[in-house]
Image (cartoon, rainbow, N blue to C red; front, side, top):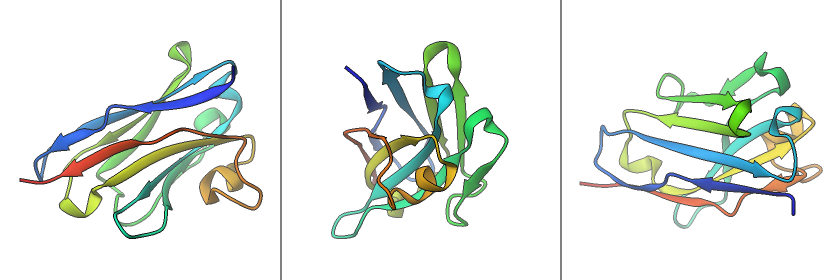
Length: 126
């Protein structure tokens, strides 16, 4: 069965760090561009970071630039999202998506990425 699965979410205090994982099973994640998305309470899901096949290109929205970093571990068929200096407004359900197209992986639609994970909750609160 081909699927993506996020993990690593949890409750963290403001200023803290978390590392999310996006693990693939049944297919090779290195063959895909990866996008990270989050959905804050009462808001629509939005993309904030993505990385191309081969890791030549990465993108971060201004709000997370310098705080979040995407990294691949091809041996583990996993992509990580290191999140530092977390803020309460980073709270939300975090998803990863995989698609051969960098544009689709970043946008999350038009068309929908080949794979979506089920999401992992991140809560930043004191």
